Each structure stands twice: as C-alpha cells, then as structure tokens.
Length: 253
Image 1 (cartoon, rainbow, N blue to C red):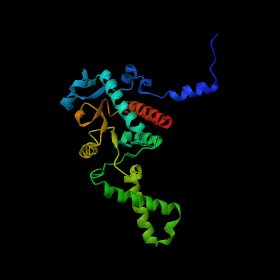
Image 2: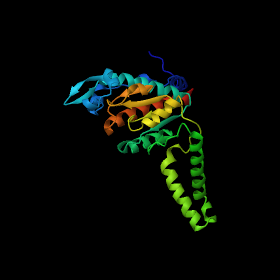
Image 3: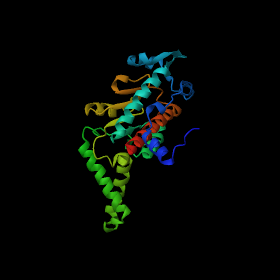
Image 4: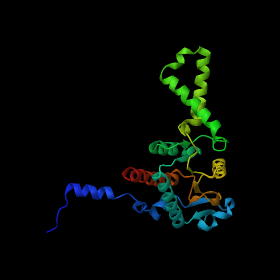
C-alpha cells in the first residue's frame, strides 16, 4: 500500500520545485503557422543573416525555424537570468503595428517601454532624460491633487500642453531611475538608434532579427519575421512566460 503524503509534506515539495526554461516547448509547426519563417525579398538580404536561412520561396528568403528555436531559447534563458536577479528590461517597439503589443506586455510585466520614436540621447544623455521624466511626474501629481488651480489660465494651458507632449514621449520610462540592464528590440531596423546607444553603454541587446538586419548587433539575436503581428506576438508571448517564471522563482528563493 502506497504511503500518502501529508499536506504539509506536499507543500514543502511544491516550494522546492521552481519553474525552469525546460517548461518551454517550442513547436516548430506552430512557429511556421504564425509566420516566423518569412523573411524579406532576396534583394534585401543582409549577408550576416545567411547562416539562419533555409532557402528561397517566390523571391522571399525563408528562415530556418530550427535555428530560430535554438536562438529563442538562448534569449529566454538570458532574460530569465536577469529577471531572477531583479534587473530591469526595457522593451522597444516603435513600429506602428507593434506598439500596442509591446505596451500591453510591458505593463503586464511592470517593465519600462518605448513605443514612440526613440529619442537620441535616451541612454547616452540619460540624466537629461531623467529631468524631463521628473517634470512629467511633477505635473501628473499636481493634476491628481488639483494643484494646477493655483496657476493662471495661461500657465495651466502651457502645463497641459507640456504634460501631453511629455506623456507621449516618456510615459513608458517615467519610472526608470537608472539605465536598464538589457533591452528587447522588436525591430532592429526601425529602432537601430536604440541598439546603437545600448551598444555604446554596454547594455545587452535581445532582438528579433529579420533577414534585412545584422544579427551580430544583438547579443541575443532571434532570427524571425519582425513584421507580422502573429510572428511578433508569438515571440513576445514566450518572453512573457519566461519573465513570469523568473519572477516566480525569485519570489520563492
């Protein structure tokens, strides 16, 4: 007769079990179904993407999803590591069709994000950016507490304009007190300045790399279609699960 474990013993065992990357199963068929394998036209190929290609179909380069899965696992492992250490990840996705995906993910994970045009100096002149975000928070606080009533009509109009302008630019990074420990870039071509500044400040870059980009610019490149919402959504969902697991591990440790 099998001995039954007491509830307390089960609880102890459950506490010892921590989510790991091995819980992730990347289905190659699903990756193809959501369109991760579609690259750009052959004329737009960046030569350094050749190792990740499977072939050509109707003048479109096809990405090898086996290699995508391999590099995605490496990226997820890195993200889990930094999150489990309590570090900060900044999401960057300014392409129109990705903005809401990136914003929703970052807010769900309580992480900073940039979905409007990347402002030159965001990393390389960070102290100036901090002053602008501080001003944004000051106006926000005054609005919430009715503190704008003490100003003249003209002053209030100016502050409202400043608030809307600053909110558009800095809402996603207003609570960023220091440079992030890593960035996740959805489209390296669109946000090449963010990648450049990250490299200058020695901030690790995790990025989706389509066939028209240089994957060597990312520390953790993920070769995949960076245009289709289904493709980007698939990768971001895996990133979300990885981060949630890492946070769970951190809480239990």
